[in-house]
Figure 1 (spheres, one colour):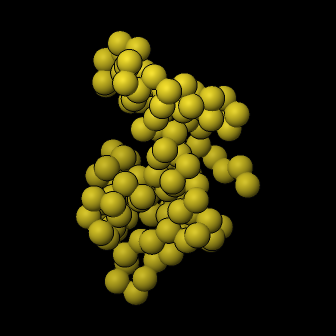
Figure 2 (tube, one colour):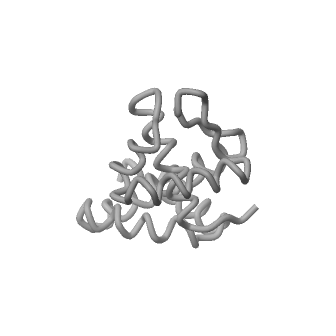
Length: 124
């Protein structure tokens, strides 16, 4: 299922924060993304309503199976593309920014080929 780029970014942020901290609240996502708490609360509510995010009685966020699949895919694209662009000589900051835009529009086929190429030439 195709979801909006902003939703993918929120899922990726939740994924990264869960990896870093073991738990995440909406305020953590707000700090991580730089968006306001009300914007994050609205987005998290929509993600929950669409079956991508769970919220427990303490306000801790989790990813459902569907949300986790999307988050892992976007995060992998982000890290691989950032690595590839950095290896090409792009500064790390610009590489990360560009990867964040590319990760949402690149086809699965093209991404697979770029990833394959990167792994083949990783030692080069």
